[in-house]
Image (cartoon, rainbow, N blue to C red; front, side):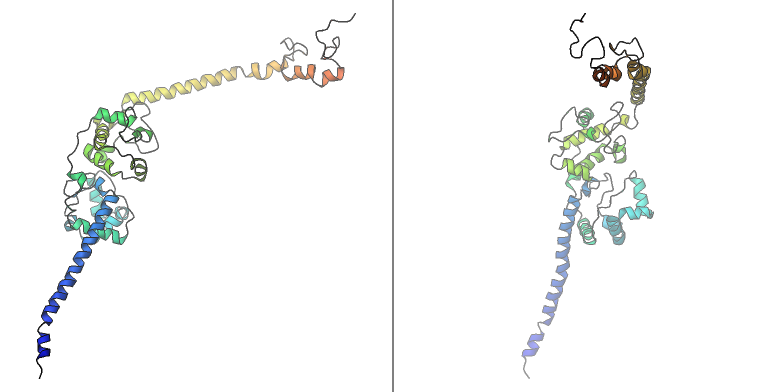
Length: 326
């Protein structure tokens, strides 16, 4: 009997171990690729505007070890359809909504594969956390922030003043624009000046992305605007602003009434009486036909042409200044 087959069988355990090692390594490579795609999604969708990974709570919770704190099935559903979970009163979703000042997580329209990629990224610990969370918080200047908000000072990169779209307390009677939400209580809802500054860094709304992507505010400008909006005095519009608005409204109403009264008082003088009080020849208000269309019709219209004169039978037509013939 030949001994060669026995020699070949001796290598079978080695082949089996090598095959097992290769198959075990494949999911690891796939997970690494998924985590990289998840990190890109995390940045592109500006998740760092509301969440840090290891940097503490911002507008929303810190996502460090979130894959260990929440079941995988729940986490997948929450990332893909947060609005549906809030609508069906999921206990954890309701708890988070109450804890973070009613700020709802937006539905980002992610596919199943994209959600899996984000979860894979979170499982890696976020690659050391988001850069926004790691950076030290800048101290904002509320006065400079007010100037930037109102347009008294220009943003360094040329962005428009916030007041062009937003309103807030502390700006007098009208308080700003009405194209976007009022920001009087935004700092309170977003966790103070630091949370608001992080939220501004992410440009989380489509309108803000369109306006600010090519001309973003600097970190210091974000901190200044956030400090202005976080002032306690802005939480409620001041009584003086309310009285200013009421005074302007009343003044406008008085002006409109005065204009209407003037027009009503002179309605007959200018609209009806003058044509009726004109004389046929002079147009003076000595008779029932004073000026207007009747005088013109009488002197230059069909009556004058019929008589062959300009309305006075003693003066030939076209020679109004000629002396009378005797």
